[in-house]
Image 1 (cartoon, rainbow, N blue to C red):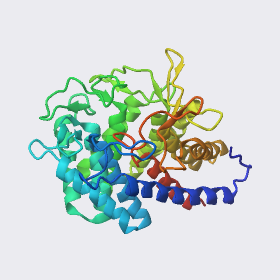
Image 2: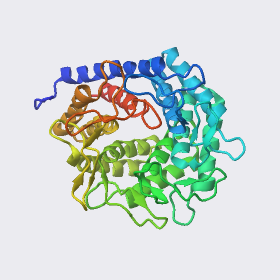
Image 3: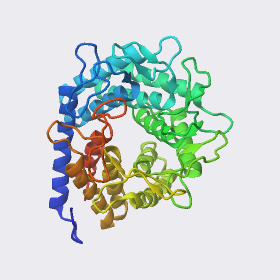
Image 4: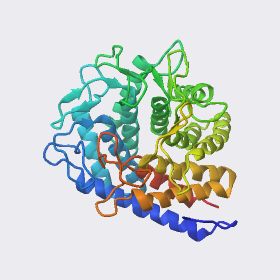
Length: 406
């Protein structure tokens, strides 16, 4: 496990930075070599730990949008034409197969051949598609991507925005009528408003604002950040409230350590994108307090536990890959703000944990996660939710952040 002296060694940071660049290329190479569906188009819907694809698996908008974002963002960083080409593959597949030309928005999933499977309008999915399209426009200059992103933004605002109570409704059926089941997955509560979707709407809107600095869009980002300040951040313990009714009644006490640490830096970054000085100051303070809350989930091995239910004093004894990636950024961000050594140590130890337990050194990419005894969680390595998003973003963010250390 990494230890630090009082004076931070430049060699430690230089090594961290170098490993981030190397790991980013490793991740991207994996996705280019093993996930492209050359027979049916786009990307396989599921691949196991031995890199064997399920050629019949459905393909989700989240997977394809996150691939689009990852390779677009990476191209801005690497200038490798193969990365832009892969982003273009994702763009074309989304445009050809996920876009609902009749009712607007994007489908939640298509089957392995690209035909609509689940046509519901999950706002989380629309947000990630905006996120990917905006990044692809920035990387490629393809005006259709910006047009697509604006169209999805307008759909969210037209159908999902709650004009009476503020915030955004979670999901609708294909024709934008109320849906009975609003959940992203079986483990979620079936509530109308969720922290997770709002976090990724503001993330997507900030990415869109970088290429389309519209005043109305800026006001929506401000509204979303204020919702986090007012409702989503628990004022007593600085964990995030996860599920709400329309009237902003919290319906869960669950602590999601990964979402905590992700929000700690991401909300601050969104405020910085729109250059809102008051909100920047507010969310810099929250970045520290939320990081402290997330640190409650750190194990002695440097890994971040998944979730904790305080009412039952029940810890979910799993360490998923994506919270480790977010911990690398979130704790480093807290160190940038405070220069308190513990935060840098947390970030370095998160990366150490990934290297030791999460990297699939034989077959590439990151495992889904490990159990308490470090046995592998028996879940796919690439698929509907397992995408090159959290890990590639961590590599890019960390490389950039270490590069500006004074």
